Image 1 (spheres, rainbow, N blue to C red):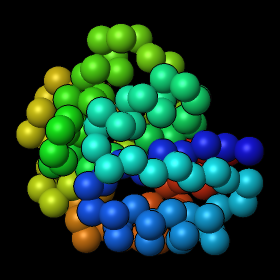
Image 2 (cartoon, one colour):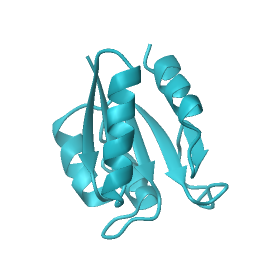
Image 3 (cartoon, one colour):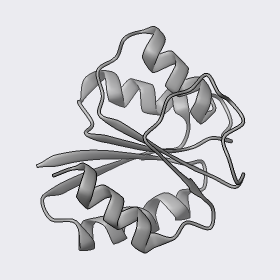
Image 4 (cartoon, rainbow, N blue to C red):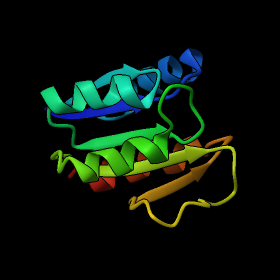
Length: 117
């Protein structure tokens, strides 16, 4: 079983993506968080093969969360960014894939299947 965490302050997006991923990707567990701080707490307690995060969120943004994971040397798998911006402006953060919103769902699912083999 592979573990994914979806992080977005728009609950509807998280819930819809979670349902889609569970339907399209076999042997997957999906947890949800609404901001980076909530996500860090979950990631500290459980290994995630894939982190999918929005950048612009209240409390702790996605890029701040990624920097915090690195700073605290928290073990995790790949990182996907999903954002309303066409490109990542913060060159300090490391990630594996970048998806502009609205997300091409087929491309997202193909990426997950490919990266979680």
